[in-house]
Image 1 (cartoon, rainbow, N blue to C red):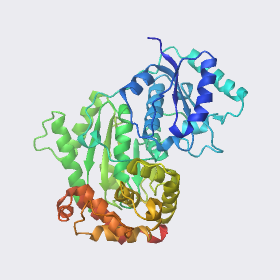
Image 2: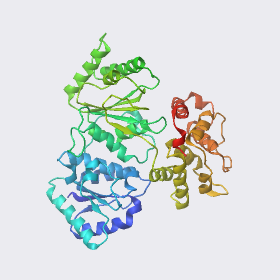
Image 3: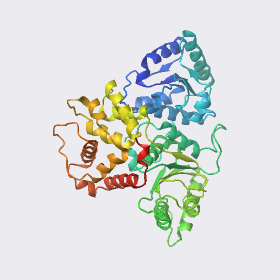
Image 4: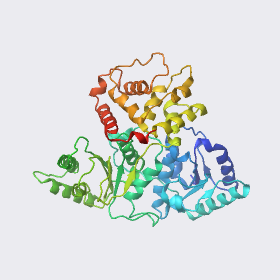
Length: 462
């Protein structure tokens, strides 16, 4: 089978513009793959995987909606990683940016590149087609598939719902691979990235999504080390070394009565010998650990790239930091659409207003969207969304203290936000309110909620 010259990546909201672009590409004699059955709720199918591997070039119509859609994220990420095997990935990946600026574009290599603006004339379309044809002729082979054979961790088989934050995902990747990337990114000495933000804003979810979406960059696999519940330096180190001892056993090493430091060095040597890069995610690192303790968490081998998630900074420890805030209005509306299954413009306008009021807090948006799913009221869904008021801390305080069970099928009315959140939590974890106390994940959520209430800054969420 002859390869496609170009894989056309776009989001459903840009269909009209993409139709004209596809016609120009075909008029230039290019073989174009475009998923005509595209739907905003679709994920990544085997057909997409095969088509991308058989294409020489990826052309992304990179509107502001593009980075909020998972399939688009996967297509661009996979093409970029595959293209890196051939040198500069910008020789295989081209962007058309219809927006007035490039602030939404990631990775930074594409944002810094001379991308095309919105095509407004037939001449504009012809110039884009000509550039794609040049790139296709220069490519001797298709992109091919870059697939890691390492087994996925169980927690990554079904990653948690995740929308947007594509720039932050690429910021993590650029920090981990600064030594490997072109000079458009700052160079660092350590393959390390710190994901930082208040509790409940999705640091763990971001790390999970990075490990899932970028897993093909780590043929040695992904390791997950959870330090949750160990808030003192000694406890955090003990938990870390216990994880490393387990990894040593997985690698077939006989550690016997070796010290933690000896086991750590042994694991590093085994990984060096295998010569396959691994990703280690060290989740829930206690805040304000001394630099010497943090140094101990970074494996002494260039084959381990490390992501640490933590609630606060570590002054004096030179590590690239990716700060996590609330979701943008575009990301919030995409999350609502994915959960509620509705793209009604009146509802989405109300969601945007909710994003502004709660600072884009993911727990608030997810809980309210889940509670409103398949429900109607006299005022309509938009009216119900507008009835959600109070600071994020107010919302989460009510969620954390909710205990009474909520019947799932009772008639819905415009309830206070605390009731909406309580219903969402109990629907997710079960109808028995006591289950909220027993479930490990629920306990983790409640701890995060209380941390926000105790240590957050409610004024940030007007």
